[in-house]
Image (tube, rainbow, N blue to C red; front, side, top):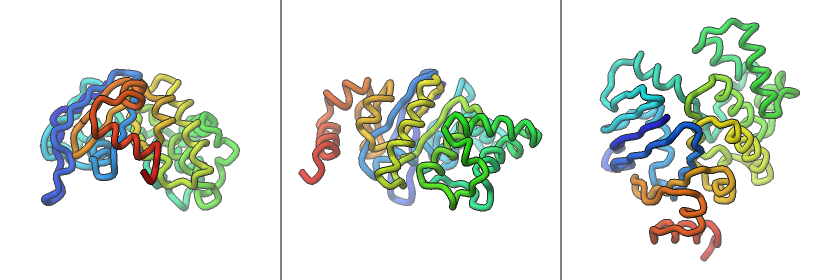
Length: 247
């Protein structure tokens, strides 16, 4: 479903990604772990060309785009096969929850308002936000805003759903509701790639866990292997610090 081949990306003299190769099968839930600066978020942004990689290629459902591609229509076609849930929600502040979810349907998919509203209401209901559809972002908690963001991504029916640290901007007491929501989405069978620091969540939801360090994949395997029995010393060090902060 998703093929990432030889991805390199640098910002000035900072080499953020150094030849990343990842294959994701249809229906897999892949969680990417790693310290800050390891390239996790940049990799997600390169998948849907929010960032242009310097080298490599990305293919979604066999539709491949090279990093050097200049054809905007081809890039947009690839981007439409994915949907991204951001750290900071990125909701339109002057639109209600319902309008935020409807926006992409009408602008990108050219669906008429009545049908867009019906689809958006179903998407909001699936994340437990139907009763808040007429609320503006400022009237919603961070967790509620993120669930609207998830509904906005789901309603576009992407081939691959990308999550960029979806709980990092939330107060601790709101993290659980968003993780539960993502867990329900994962059980629908959609292909997902999730960047997170939530180790317990990764163990519960992921079919695969990838550990990144220095812009490369250091370890890749089942959750019980990577989290509970990591083979790489750097993975073991990272997980020990996560599990025993301050040591």
